[in-house]
Length: 110
Image (cartoon, rainbow, N blue to C red; front, side):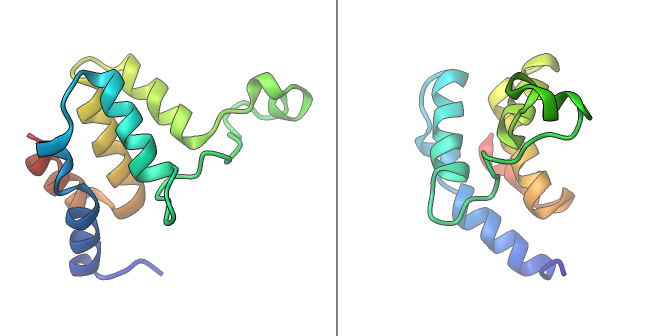
């Protein structure tokens, strides 16, 4: 069951509130900060071990077709036009907490 909106907003602001003020550098640095903040932590928001089912039976025959959720979002954000690190943060919050917290993240990131 999904948490109430207040809890999702508080969790989003608690985890991402300082990222817009403390993350200096280009998208390469931001992606490493995102990995440390959202994947390689005690309470991860995105699983780096999840195997994709997008490729169907290909993922069962070869490890080359196994892609984690973080890698899928990374590839998606690189393909779309615009600043990749902003899109990555929005996608992570969108996957975890939904649309409204993702828009709050967008405002705090800028």
